[in-house]
Length: 518
Image (tube, rainbow, N blue to C red; front, side, top):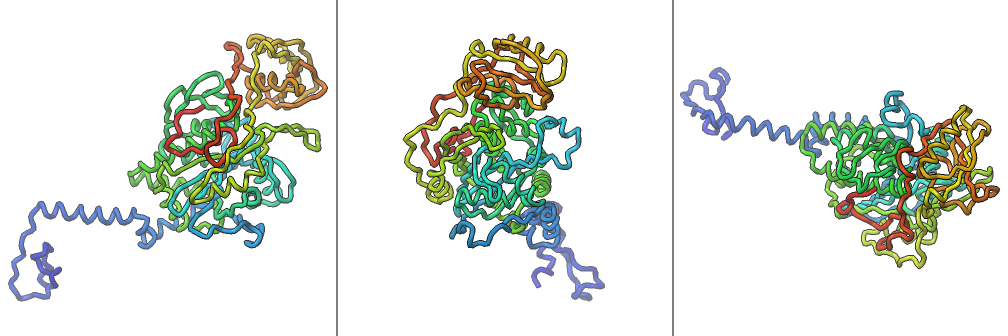
């Protein structure tokens, strides 16, 4: 055959093995430059094939690698709560709806890790403060809807409460039941059929941010509470920073000391996701890609129906997403800080969703040709009461820490911040630092609360114009005596809604226009 002819550049067989034994054949010498070109060419072809996802699924070596990645993934039974007939109808086209969850579990973390990531005093637990519904259209347009963690919803079998409690309630029912109950809660709320569930754990997020090599984010302003917060551990300068590890986690976790609280945290998460997508699309180094595959698969908990091949297909779809087609939004709300007393007397502040607008909103958000609903006739209220000057705040300080100088030390700090301290005294020992106030003093109370990250707000109708600050053994840091009390500038009305949402910070934006923020 032609391939055996030396004229085609192959060395002849040894005489004993040659089928032309006995014949005189002169092999054409192979020029040195031809040998140098051909060998690397064959090597590069093989290497490129092994790294190709297509070959990974078919070659022996690639199949073993694929199985290794697939075995890294933890799977749970999510869609076991109802027959398909009892769930929202599945989209008839190739659309896909995925519930993305960030859990707060500290399982497996060492004391050193908890200290490094500033998570030794904020509780942890099984609540899911990051909940997103991702819709992928057949043409790979992506819409991501973020649910505020305090959204008041019906949790099947548990009555009504904040949506971030659904996961913990499911785990309390039986181990592993959190993903199922949260998914059922979201399906009932939205009327959207969830195809898959993906959870990223607390410290797994840190690992992924490191594997990516960090992402660039931008802080618009730096002040007492903007880019510095002891509760989350965030400490970033004004302008652009490349963050990973502890600072990446702190950046997306911060809630306290942001003007719009959880809505600003949602904005942070949007900007981080957009930056991560931009970064991943630029990675070309095979070793980095392999490390990223290993880290991501070791960091995921998914539904049992999401096979490794489907996960690869999903990764391919997301890799091809145009950043201008990656949109973020939040559901419409009536009041982002609705007060409520529970049956046990506990006071909570929750996000009151606009239930009348939810069906149209999610129909639009999961439509391949979304049409924005008519704008609301009434503006949503500001995320927080309008702040007041520190000189207009009068406080009685009660020491529940059991220490000798707790109240007097706090009086010195508050006075240095410009707050009027009417009296100090002792009270019974308590674990939680709280601000107690009458409804008429909500603005003054929330202004003071901005200086005490993590403080519990309690409405007390028996109080008059004086606020009570009760010091607990949690030893929350009270402001900064070297500066005046930070008074955030908050909008009195939200920006006009131009898309399928009317809540605070909820005008749909895409990954190309997420720039600097709080």
